[in-house]
Every structure is written in structure tokens, then in C-alpha cells.
Image 1 (cartoon, rainbow, N blue to C red):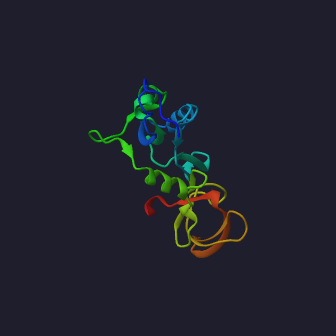
Image 2: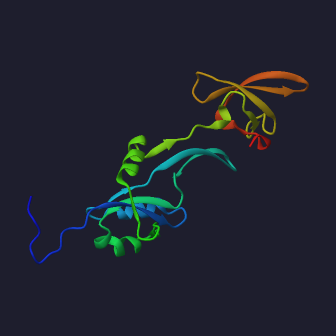
Image 3: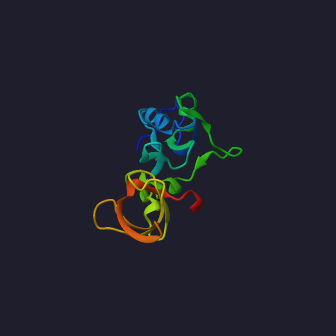
Length: 180
């Protein structure tokens, strides 16, 4: 191991910091910061299904909206980091800014791809649902079971005074508004 020349101070340690980002710009800030040499960036994300005007769609968003993690030398890279597009500042309390490394490592190890897939709760057995498309649009029912066929579920609904069991695509239903 070589020591730094007498005229240079020792290199600052690389530490993890939590960075505050602009709304919905976590991925932009992470992409730009990851291009900086000797900088490590972690932006955990969650993929979940949301209702849109055209039905249900899967969206991938930041797990911690408005925050990302970056490992860098505070003294050497602070100005560059806070002036990066999408970054608002470094989170800290008093003089404490660094995040303990084991916290970030444990989080990263629990998300091997950096993304967690949130299940579609509207397809859990017992869930009260509403049909949002197809010939049953506007009707309500109760999920009985998930079927082996890809993305299909069995639903019990009341239709013209009778209870009817139907198999439908999970994309055609949402949790009933009063079930939230």
C-alpha cells in the first residue's frame, strides 16, 4: 500500500449519502450520477399496477419517492452532486449526513435487480372487485381464486338475481372503490 505524496492530503473515504431529488426525477439523477467516475448509485424501485383511463397498467417508480442513495467522497464531489440535474440536496441532520453502509448493502441485497414487483392486490381471493372493461364493465364481484391460466381469475358476481361464476382476465378488474 502506498501513502500519498507529502504535498497531498489523504483521499477522503467513500461514504453512502441519501440525496433528495426533484419529484419524479429519481431515475434521471441516478443515471447522471452513475456516469461520474468513482461514484456508486442505488435507486431502488417498485413495479406496481395502477388504474388508468384505458385500464390497468404496470408502472415502475422509485421505492422512496424523492430520494436516492449515492456513494462518493463528500469533500471531493459535493458540489458536483448537488448541481446534478434532478438532485435537490443531501439529506442530513446537523453534521451527520452519511448513511451507514450496511443499511444500503442490506437493502440492495434484498432487491437483486433493484426492483420489487408489487402484486396486483385486486386478484387476491376474497377481494371485492369492479369490472373496468369488457361486457361486464361496471359490475361488482368477489374474487374466488387465481386460475392456472396466465393472468386469469375466477370471480363470483350477482347478475339478474343469480350468483354467477366467471373466469376473466385480471386486466379487466380493479379493487372496488369502497374496498380501499
